[in-house]
Length: 202
Image (tube, one colour):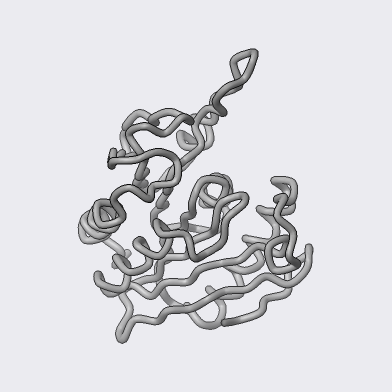
C-alpha cells in the first residue's frame, strides 16, 4: 500500500503488480464503498489474468474515515495526483487503463483525456439519478466525452439506467442491480474479454 499526498490530503493506492506487465488498470471506488467492493476486486483479478498490474485507489475522504464523498473537483484533483504519482514511479512506462465503480467511474471519465488514459473502464456508471420528483440531468455527456476505448459493465436492473453503446463504447449487461454483486464471475469475464481485445502497445 502506498500513501500519496494530494491537494486534499493523503490517498492510498493498493498495488497488485503483474510479473511482466503489459499495462496497468487503475480503479477508484464508489461514493459510499471502498476498494474491497466485489466488482472492483473482480476487475482487478481480470486485469492480472490478462497481464496487467492493478492499482486500487482510496480517495482522501475515505482514508480520513469519512463516508460522504468530497466535491467533484476535489475528487478529480486527488485522483489526478495519485495517477500522476503512479505513472512517474510504480507504473512508469505502462499504458494506463483508468476506471472505477459508480462515482469512481465518473472521476475516471472526467480526467481520462488530461491523464492520457489508454482506455476507460466503468463499473455501474450512474447514468441518471433515480427516484427524483423532477427528471435529473443525464450524465451521458461524461461518457460521450471519453475519446478512448471504453467498457461499461452495468447491472440489467440498475435503477440508474443502462447507457447506450457508442462508437468507442462497449456496454456489457450483467445480472443484478447497481451493486453488481449478483454475478461477479460475469463482471470479471466481461472485463477480461475487453482487456484482451485492447491494443495497449501504442
